[in-house]
Length: 152
Image (cartoon, rainbow, N blue to C red; front, side):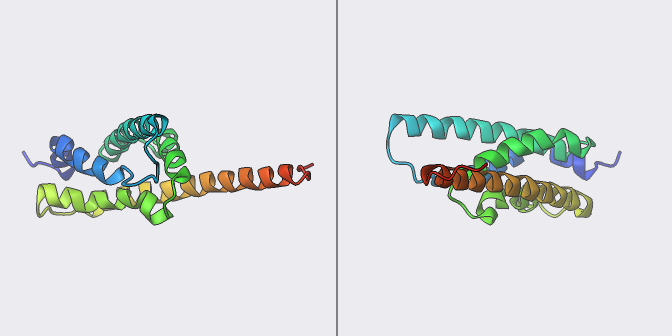
């Protein structure tokens, strides 16, 4: 029986996922020591770990794109409010390629799986951009409100 790449990846899920989740978590949110800030970081970490687990499982499945979008949207909302560049916020998605190669060693034909990761990255860029646009609109509306020029 020939072991497929997807099966190898699935068999090494825990190790790959642990490394990928570490790459997905923010390294510095710029938060100072308040208890509320620390609780926020913990809940953000839990949510990001949950969402990366779902994204990973989607990558190794044959599910359609529509099933991953709500989870990706939630992750992008979190990433969009952090003070990171888009490449810092979403670069962890592409990091998965290297993590898989690190864990599995030399594997044949990663091309199809790499394409699935690239597809996820493009979807994430769309979602992230939409979230950033919403944040900017909120800021603009607030400035206009404070200036007494609320949008009509």
